[in-house]
Length: 157
Picture 1 (tube, helix red, strand yellow):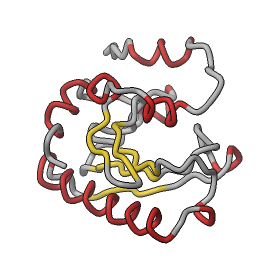
Picture 2 (cartoon, helix red, strand yellow):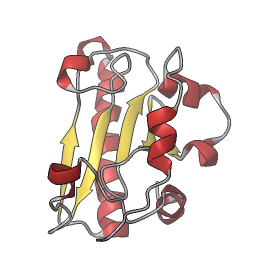
Picture 3 (cartoon, one colour):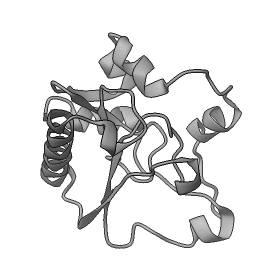
Picture 4 (tube, helix red, strand yellow):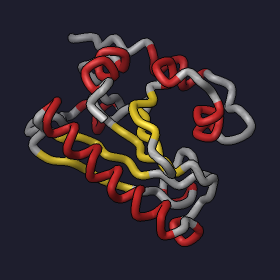
């Protein structure tokens, strides 16, 4: 039997759920490297997902704390999509994935873990990056540490 070591998952499972918006907290802090913030634009920022589906899993987040696309201004929305495009371009350059999943989960019922602050996920995908682990044991294997992923992407935006 093979064992998988993913100690960062336990921190997530056991952590006390904080009040307030974690994405807004990241914005307020001047600790981009510690928070895995890769880029700050005029209206949006790029941050590594702390609990990724795959290495390089990015989130594009507007500064505007709102839970829907309809509430974003045209400038915020246009920059958001441009930043998604930029994220894909950098991930292609650095990791050369075979494809991408892009997604927004609007509302808890739609699967949003942070439902009060709209954001877009970019998940790089490679042939064979899925296996029986999620189905059989509800476990996802991430083969790269966040700090290493951040180091590869730092300065590319």
